[in-house]
Figure (cartoon, rainbow, N blue to C red):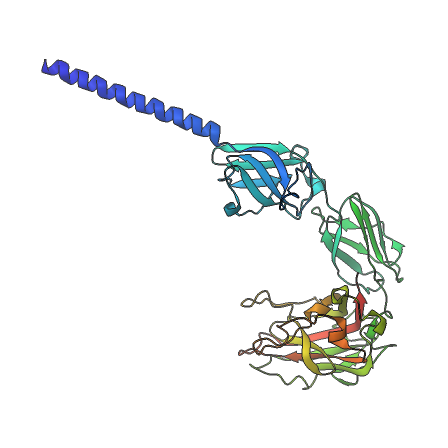
Length: 408
């Protein structure tokens, strides 16, 4: 009897364990089935009534993926390109995500075109929707005033599927594009003044300003317009600065000690005092963000730590800090143009007041009239070390073609 009871207990235990295993397996299968992501629609990420259903997407667009099992997504791709996302913006039924700004459309495999893929630990799903290249945009031109034979690079987005390209009004047929559409490079064979024009399958870039233009908006080109009153030396043939247009000043300072603000020292400033209007009186009512300060810069060696302050009329109420070596408030890296002339663009909104005792870090001018008034303005480039440590390097730099340009 005792043996029979033990056998029955063993059988009951075995049966119970099998039942638990079956139930767990069933639950796992249900989880695997129900846990796979599902996308049912894509909507515009905006407040109602603008959260409309969309059937066509462009790079950089914010969207809401709607469906189920989206909360624990580990990967989301658009045309095979992984998107960065914040899971805190997700729920089980929706996911807020930004489409990557850069999608290399010409090199996307055919089976990944026009697809959104969402994956989690349980599996993945693919949703088909048109994803098209957005209109081309311009970020920068490596040198707006090149010499004949120089390679010019245009930086931006969606710079592919090009049907027309011209620089200074001259058609360019020999060019190289990056697969991701962020750059086009081409040699310049003819130097003429005119706009940059790029026509693609999704739009057009046509600059309001002209390249190869050494007269419009020029404050000083050190040849025919303006001149340097005092400061550093000038040259037109220094071997460290090839590819120049005539004369240019050379800032040349060694390593600066902590707090060295003696900008009037030898070779440490450019002072143009003959005075010219940064913008015409008729333009003073236009928005300040329509104008930028530009100049060509050549830094053959390393530059790290020396600050370049740009002011007008020796007036420090608004100044721009040019510090291309500064990656963040705590991190720097050596900057160089490797002996090539490059175009620097500084928005006039970067001319700022003093904040917490630090020049050029406060508020922008609210208008052109506040920044300039109607008086002709001088311009000054000063080299300074405002930190409590010696600079990592000195600075040897050529500067040319200082101008104010209307960009929109």
